[in-house]
Image 1 (cartoon, rainbow, N blue to C red):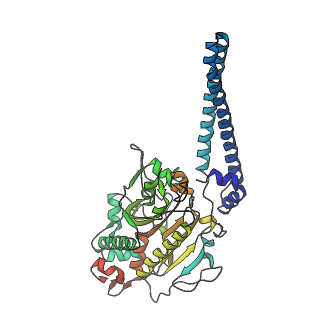
Image 2 (image 1 turned 180 degrees about the vertical axis):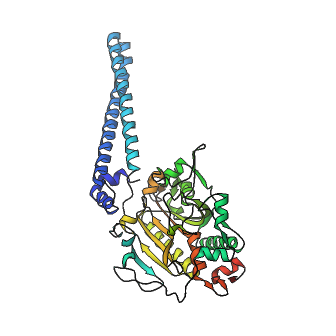
Image 3 (image 1 turned 120 degrees about the vertical axis):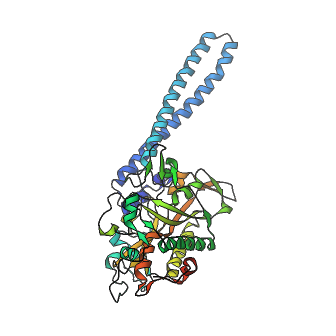
Length: 438
């Protein structure tokens, strides 16, 4: 969540940032937050004064008793009792204000960095790089005019999956429901090959592999901003009050909840492969066919914890890492800088990576790489202890998909099909044990 220091000291910047994200009622929300904080501060000040006076009076009681001034001593005792009662009321008022403030701050999104472009939705996202051509200033998704040339008609991945017996969507419906495919044979091997390839690449880049739980408690969901879950996108195990993770970001980042990290340990670099679960409520139509949008899928995630002054450099390094994976997979890709209106609730800046589907003739998002600034860390109470003066400050958190498998698989199948079969990119061949699926 946004820090009170930022809200109170840079109010105008916060409001401008929220308006760039098209957050309705930005001015009103920030004004309310400041008002509640003032109530909390006033209660705290009165409580401190109350306690100080009560302590001073209590110290007088013994002296009055020794002097035989019993009536005066009793009067002081009554006053102390009154102050204690008032103190309890002030404690309650302060606690109520803190609860109201925390609930309000949970509803206010992060503010974007200055370099995040204006815009209301996906069409306004800026194309900053592609392996198809040099990007021009002003290139946006809305005016992008370059897609790979496809000489002949291509089969969509769901038909290829059936043709080569790689993925059984109908069997998944039978066992669980729509959005839970069954991978088999070389399809299952392709999944495992991609997972191992992504993990090996992450390890080579200095990331420590984590194998976390795939269910988390409410505190973990709150820490990374998935809870409160307004859109109902997380699967909730109600009896135990646990949640299936939508991404490994949640358990891995929560390793550092309520932790103070020595500056010399940063940046921390973790990666994790997990199954991910998303309800995707309201998803329907052609854009969710096949692997385009699933309820359960595999993903390798990279996570960093860093100092405020180095987090932007970490973000650049993460972008280079993800781009390197797409280069090695030999896929047509483009990198988008998301506009304010298309950013997630928690991110300060986010780049999406998309690969082109030659059969569907559309771009498929395969990774989002985000810097959350202090937003998550403030909720997590994750802090950095400085080496020089031993003081602590809020850390920065970052994460990105490296990579999510479903749409990568879709693009690999569609873009590499040939009369002989489906060609396997050279980087994956050692993992697959073959160079073609036929």
